[in-house]
Length: 267
Image 1: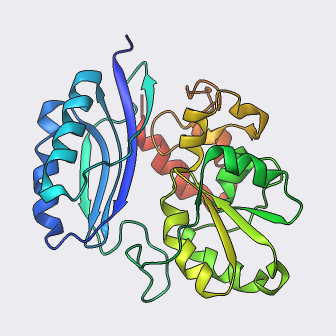
Image 2: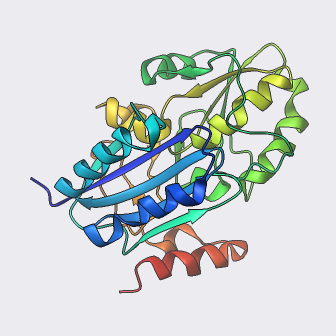
């Protein structure tokens, strides 16, 4: 058995007291949990790792507690030879992912736009589908689904302007979008539907596709950037590729990202 396991997860759910939730989560740091957790009034988003038995206990406690707010939560897993994080950091923020459009919340109701990895594969072959990478441009350059368009954005908050500029050209087509774990698409989908677009989002994002599709490399070109010490993972085994921050952040505009990535693993 490998010594450590990584899990990523999120849920949009009303949390009346985000700070109280954060305090309970911080208690897992001394027990061996590492990673980054963001809590807001609209829900929770996290990427964590720990010894396998510690992570299992944390997931049981999270889904069983908090008045049922996280019951049935889906965790996307992969095994690690070493911990991809150093500490546990739990932040309370206004949003669990900042979209940059006033009034848009992940709590908004709307038609379900999720598609399974199997359905996603069919969309990639549909000539009436526009496949959009809902990540930053540096992530697309490192790896992407075949046929995916790079919106050329430096930050997620720039994505709405890209959509508005292309909305008319996409009329009558299915706009299929994906991101690393699904959360960015979750935040975007209802807003895009309100713009009159037909939307499909990959359920659970790239990581879920890798986990459920043994032949994921047939549809994925390159590596997948992850926001931890591993930097990038391969689509078949979800293991580190050996790519370094200096390999990823070659643009001068990304100097701050390079510095941040180096701080993750200074040794």
